[in-house]
Image (cartoon, rainbow, N blue to C red; front, side, top):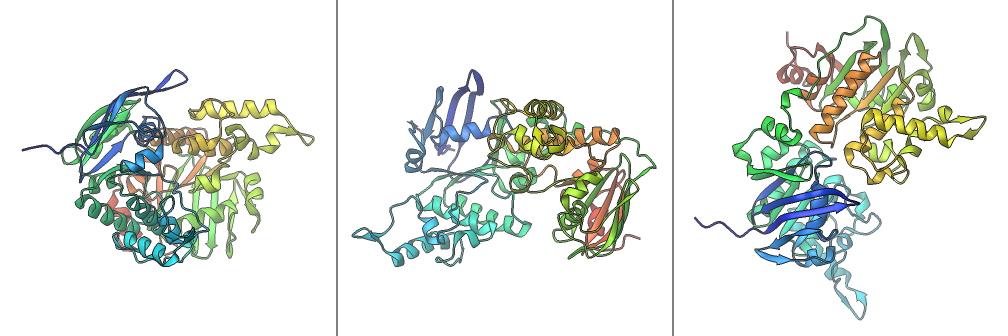
Length: 500
């Protein structure tokens, strides 16, 4: 049986920055008509490899091949002409222009005498979207689209350039389960048309549902390429991190009987009559289906959303209603939000300035900010959380997703909170960084910090928590010990079914 010539090959790619090897002889081979997962921890070299094969970086050595022929890309446009297009997690959508204009962005717009033919523009854009089974108004502003619609517009734009190799970086990070299935259907249809899809994701369950083959990178090297059917999630994790997957979660500690947080009869828009108690050094997980009220509960606790009624008591002191984030922080409770890029950090500011902004009182005196104190608190946070960066002055937007999450944690931990609220603390980060976050949570608990963590991943709740509260339609439907719990038990509470 003849093997198809690879649609894209990277052969022995080497790339260094300031003497540090980012890629060390990396190899990648993607066939036409396959969905190929590219996996690895943050810092493994995935992003650098993508930038090399799409013309953003020139390799120091090695060769890129397209349909078996050696190619060199001077820039991204040259890669596009060769049919290679990458779509990143932060989509390059222009929100103030129409869907049609976004689909044909960068392409030769249909025009006469320098005037764009709007009817032809909309017709051509519609053809590309209909290929994806999308019925979106061509006149609608792209900024008014849902996340999945924006993703589809970006894919349609790639098809408009006749992309035959489509590279997707975390395409489902902000999508619901229903929207993810919609994206999967489109990717399978493109695969059936012969398009080669490179799929980068930290969600291994998605990889095993969608992909045909996978390549795992670690420390700038290719470790293995194999059929997805010939491996397991645990094997993939062990290969990615270089250790057994069973070591992902640290051992549970001993919980104190001292009460840290009391929530009584809390009411919100979705939250209804929520009451619970958390103890000093306890890790309490909050689970439930999307829309169950998990994130709203954390926003109310953090002072980011007003409650309709109810009381919140931290370390024996009741927090006045409608206190706002500032007073809740002062009371000893801090939130690490789900949307770290839009709510947790200033991407254009440095690591040290992000940390300083949340700790003005600690880095200033008599209204004067101490740059020395800022540097000290930032350096300590970077060391404690093992943030990988050139220096505390590096811009946060230049960091990997896992290191951005660590910056959010660093600025909140510098306040030494009694209660740390974490909404999806490991969303969009690799398994190695997840293990670091789990270790950090356990270290915080051991020193007396109470952690309240929302997660949509049931194994994560079971592995990292002491106790799990499950929400259903705004109320707590289950309060179970994490030790001995399983997915079936948690799901039964999530769907509001009695387990007695």
